[in-house]
Image (cartoon, rainbow, N blue to C red):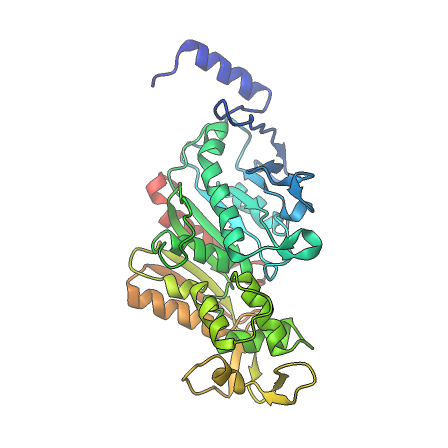
Length: 378
C-alpha cells in the first residue's frame, strides 16, 4: 500500500529521535534506540531487546535465560540499506551456560561490513539459571526469535525475506537442528513455525552427531572429567527430553540420534557453512567408569554400550571439545544429500578459529552474502 503524506511525516519524526514503534494492537511497541559502538565508523547496537515474554521477574530466573537479544546495526535507524543481510546468532556453552554478549567484537565487525546481526539468549539447561530446559525448549526459543524478525524488520524499516542462522559449539548444534527441522519436521515433531526462511546455516564447531561414540569420548575426556558414563548420559538424555534416571545407553543413543542434525539432513536442507577445529586427539585406550565405584574400562567399550557396530578407532580427533569426526559426518551427509555447503577444517582449538585466523571471517562473510543474495544483499 502506498504511504500517505501523514505516514511519511510520522516515520520521519520517529527516525529523528532514534526509534521506531512497530507491531499490532496485541504487541507491545518495540523501541529501538541504537548507540554507536566505540571505535566503529558506522556500527550501532541496541542491547537487551525482548523477543518474548520470558523476562527476568517474569518466568526467567536469570538474564542469560531471558528471551532477549542484542541487535548490531550497520548504521543508525534510517541509514540501513533495505536489503542488508540479516544474521541470527545462537551462542554456545554446552547448552548450560553462555550469553548473547560473548562475541560482541565479531558482531561489531560484521555490522561494519554491512550485516544486521541479532545475538540471542535462550533457555539453558542449568538449574541455577532457572531449570533443566531441553533441546525442544531451546529450539522453541529460536523459533520465537525467528517469528519476531518480521516485527523487527518493520521497526528498522528494512526488508528481511530470508535470514542466515548460525552459532558456535552448542549454538552451532541448535542452529543446524533448527534449520534442518524446517526441511524435515517429522523427525522432531515439535511443530516449529519457521516463519522466516533460512537462506543458509553456519556451524562454528557445532556437533552434528551427539549420539556418536566419538562425541561421548570427547565429552567424558574434556568436558565432564570425574563424571561417570551414566552421569553424562543422564544429562544428555535430559536435554533430549528423557528422564534423568534413564540408564539404558541404547535408548539414550536413540534419543540423541533423533536430536543430531545429521539425522535430519535431506535434499531440502538449506546451504550449510561449517567451520571445525583439529587441535589434538583422545586415545581410546584412555579409561572411564561406567558407574560410581565401578571398574575402569577403556573408551573402546563405549561403542558396544551404545550399540555401535563400528570398530573403535585408536584415537578420536578433536578440537578440544567436538570430535573431528563430526565434521566428516556432516560434510559426508551433505554431499550424499546434494546440499550445497562450504566447509573448512583448521588446526585451532574449539571456537577459536574466527578470532585466530582472520581470513576465515572473510570466508564466512563471503559465503553468508552468497547464500543471502536472494535478499538483494550485496
